Amino acid sequence: MQTKKVFWGELALIAGITIVSMGITLMIKSDFGITPVASLPFVLSKIITLLSFGTWNYLLQIVAIILLVVLTRNIKTGYYVSVFIVIGFGYMLDLFEYLSGYLPVTLPLQVVYYILGFLGIAFGVGMLIKSCMPILPFEAFVRDVSSHFDLSVKLVKTSFDLFCVIMAIILGMTFLGNIEGIGLGTLICALLTGKFVALFGQRLDSRYCFRPAIKLSGHS
Image (cartoon, rainbow, N blue to C red; front, side):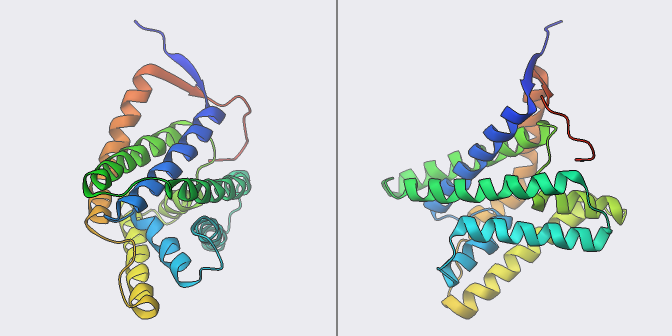
């Protein structure tokens, strides 16, 4: 039997956040549509340009954590860590969005950007899940609301994604006169991301044993 290699959770967390932020940026560059949860901060960044996409992302995720605490009346240590993580995630989004400005844009390349972005997001999320570390606030919101109210994760996740997309469409049509960031690629993400995350997770499990170097009590 092959011995699994130890993969430190903190390293998996950093790698996951980096890969996910790169993936989202590539999907934006493809112009085929971004992930449902990224659609709302993306549209808001187009409406109120004073704040960047990354800033809107972490602000909305912090709001989600506050709403989660209000709904469940429970504060976990991991929530505080999640806030710091998502702020770093927001800065990474802005960095990669800036760097993506140097990428050429042609239809074949847009297809490549979308495929790489989609796979990157799925793999990165798989890394985040396996890291055994506090997760990003949007994911924590879905997980803990499901657990607290005894609802299926699929139901809460689908409802949350639909809310983000519907709000993004309404805001885009109202303030921009068009739909920004939502397209066929958004639908593909909604239908297939979960399956690819599970696939990458299985592959990671077969090779590595994820273990945080520093254990945080009450982060789950």
